[in-house]
Figure 1 (cartoon, rainbow, N blue to C red):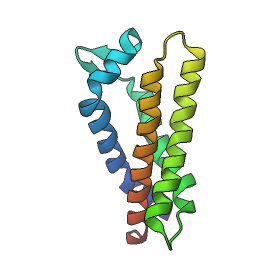
Figure 2 (figure 1 turned 90 degrees about the horizontal axis):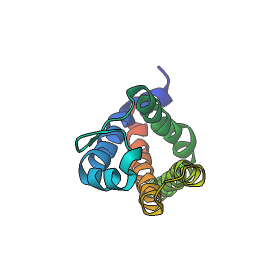
Figure 3 (figure 1 turned 180 degrees about the horizontal axis):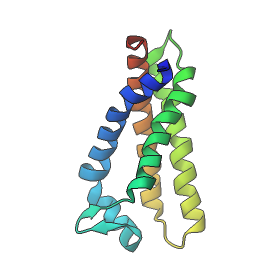
Length: 138
């Protein structure tokens, strides 16, 4: 097993937990209200298409390992991991939210703004976690 794959596998549960806490607990009501009829929901819970969600949750931390982690400066791991991770998250979530805002009849600006900021924060923290795990793994 390659080192990058080990870092990805070690990062994945942290990434999933952070996003679950945000989407499934802390901000669930916000996203349901903002999305309205666009949301795939059941009661007060978002019910994603599992195969599509699996693709997202493989791609995002995979991108961190492939694109953000290699840019982390070992001399300044905290600042560079947070910075590169935040930039990666802004780009990925920005492309998603701004494309939806540009092409869908309803994609709330407030939700897009919150989601892009969350993407930056999630990926910043996740890149820091990956940078901390990286030297511990074979």
